[in-house]
Image (cartoon, rainbow, N blue to C red):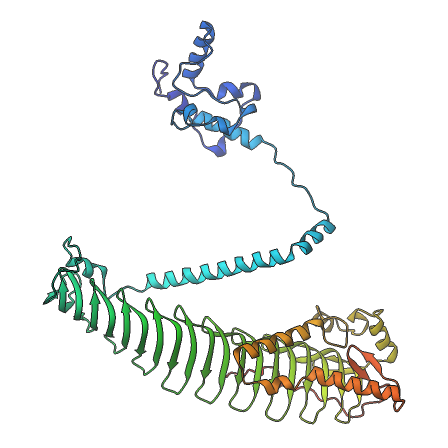
Length: 532
């Protein structure tokens, strides 16, 4: 490469181009000279010799690294020309060596105070962000589905083929004629306005699919019947070549949907039925069950409540064909959080669930009115609990994997009530049993979340009009509290020995429970079974 000092070809700059990863920063004493081109240095030298302060070079003067200001790089300074390679490198040095400001550190107390004072705003921001992410994921999934399905009917090429740069005019008279489309081989027989299909017409595609109905400005619009090549039929309202409005779709296997549509997708209130007798009546959103709906199975089971993306999610009531019933919260077709479950023989469980199994605090009542109120883990009694016999005698004990481990001594009960004993390690010797109780408080009574969850369930039942008032009336916790009040009255009249308060329950001192505590059977571990 030659040494060009009389023109503006910038060969000197080209010699300085290099890979950023191989670059070595020059010494600080030569940094300013390094950012100047040969032509700039020559021009600056001439200007300094002649006493002229302003350079006549058409290149912008390089900005020294030590006092770089981005605001100086404007249209007048650069003359609308990009920075040279050497200038860009000089700017890169400036940003790479600029010290990073230290963020102010917060003490734990300050952070806790900040979170507590803005808890409501933080929760709302998180909810909005989660909702946005969920909608974005759903939108992208629908886009991928739409791209994967190759459009076969109502092609845009068919719409464009007969236009020939014609403009739709309302005053154009209707004419009847036939047209065979070169792009698809489809045949249209019906009314036209200029180059637009308009009025009544029949469109038949090569594979046998057929649309007969109303057209408007070249598109299927109004009432029409579309018959697929495999026998599926949609009859109803159309807009812009898509099912839009109210209509009925009949599948070739006999399944039917009658309801509202938007852009070829079920959307709004609808009713779906299947040949085996199953039926769904409820709300749809973008082709999937979303909202409140009622599903009837062929075996007689039914569910009424909330849905999300074609699965049971939210609050709802499930009634099995064998008489079992559950009302409460669901997640992806399984019982989750709080709910009430009853059996046909009179048994009842009211409490928390996790992954379709009793988990957390719950009250289990047998058909003979024996009752266990306490903690559960993965479907089995595990932790502190209170057992009541059918005669009404109660005692506090310790359970492990569904079996009573032992009754608690009075000094242990007193220590738990006073809070001096607050770790399960003093009660259990097995580390695995202790790990299962992680997150469970060391207390006999229900946590505060229990009453809140029950109130929320009662509110949702009322709003959706679910037929489960009898299940709510069987308030297990209320029955226990009522017994406590009765025993309090007995205590005041002196008819019985003084009872002991244990988180809302009463434990009669010295009343040994002679009969063995029944274990909740394995059939109860997964109440929802396979009906879903």
